[in-house]
Amino acid sequence: MEQSIHVTRQYDNAEPLSIRIQTHSLYTDKKINLNDEAISLMELVGQEAVLDAGCGTGGFLRHLLNKGHQGRLVGVDQSAGMVEQTKCEGIEGILGDVRELPFTDSEFQWVTARHMLYHVPDIPQALRQFDRVLAPGGHILAITNSNNSLQLIKSLYNDMLQAFGYPVMISPVTTFCVENAMAILGEVFAEVKKTLLTNALVFRESAPIVRYISSMFSYMSIPNDPRLYDELLSWLEVEAERRLQQYGGVWTDPKQVGIYLACNT
Image 1 (cartoon, helix red, strand yellow):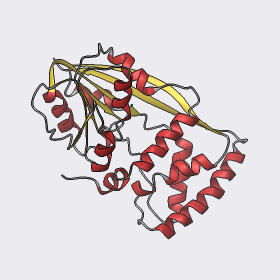
Image 2 (image 1 turned 90 degrees about the vertical axis):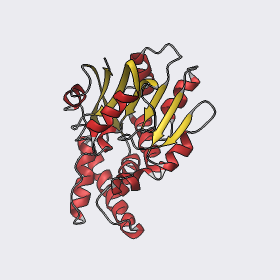
Image 3 (image 1 turned 120 degrees about the vertical axis):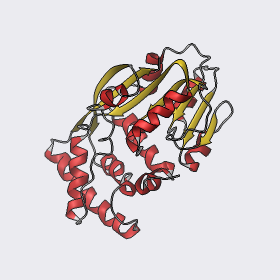
Image 4 (image 1 turned 45 degrees about the vertical axis):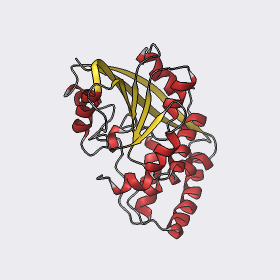
C-alpha cells in the first residue's frame, strides 16, 4: 500500500491526532460539536450502513453507536494502530486504502470522510471508490478546513522551521479544502451541498499552542531526532509566549470548517 511517508509517521501513533482533537475541543470559541453537526445534516434514521473512511481512532463511529445507531458501522484506515483503536463491539475496523476499498459494490448507504481527503494522493480515485460502494441513492459526507484557517499558528510553526533552516510547511489541507472542495466533489457527484462553520481557537496561555504545534513535528520535513525536537520545543515555548503577550494576552486564531453532502444518482 503506497503511503506518504509523512502521513505514515503522523498516524502510526494516535497521540498526535488526539492532542489536536483535544485542543480544538478545549479551546474553540463557540462550542460546536462537529460530530453532532454532521449527524444532524445526515438525517439518519438509524438503520443505515455507514462506512467511515480514514476513521482515525473511531470517535465518530462510537458517537453514532452511543446515540443508538443500529445499522452496520465500519471504519477503514491505512494505519493498523488506528484500526485497532476503532474496533469494538458494534464497530468493524478494517485496514485498507480508500483508493481501493476492500468492499463490494453498493454495501453502504453512507460514506463519511472527515478531515482526511487532503491526505489522499489521488482524491478523484477515492471519490470514485466511495461512489462504487454506495447503494443507489447513497450519500457521502466530507469535512475539511479552510486553507486560510489558523494563520497565527501557521505563521509560528513556519517561522520556527525557517529559524532552524528547514522548509516551511505548506498547509496539509491545500489539496482538498473549503476553497476547492465543491469543484472536486462535483467532478464525481452531481449534487453537492455545503455548510460552513466559522469559529476560532482562543488561547490565554502559550502551553497549549506549543503542544498543538509539537504534535505536528512528525508531519514536518525535519529529521526524526529527539534532540532536535527538544530544541524546537525550547524555541516554541519562548516565541509562543512572546507572541501571546504581543496580542495582549489573548491569542485568537480564526478557523472555518466546511461540511459537504453529496449524493450518488
